[in-house]
Length: 50
Image (cartoon, rainbow, N blue to C red; front, top):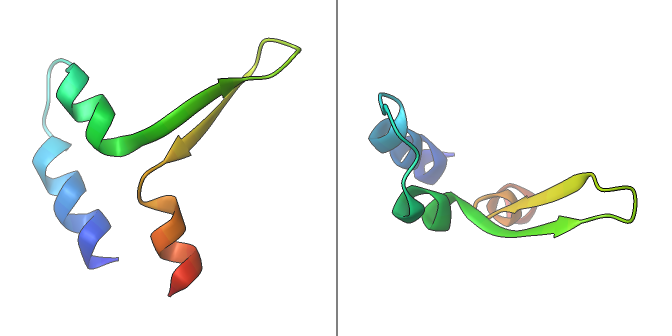
């Protein structure tokens, strides 16, 4: 939780989503057959392991 909190503090007041921000927060994005996205966040596995 601390890791997520620290990451979010950096990006809480941003005006523009930069490629660097996207790469730090998102692991990968998959597009399903129906066209809907499934987003895998980098910090999501941390919650499962705690």
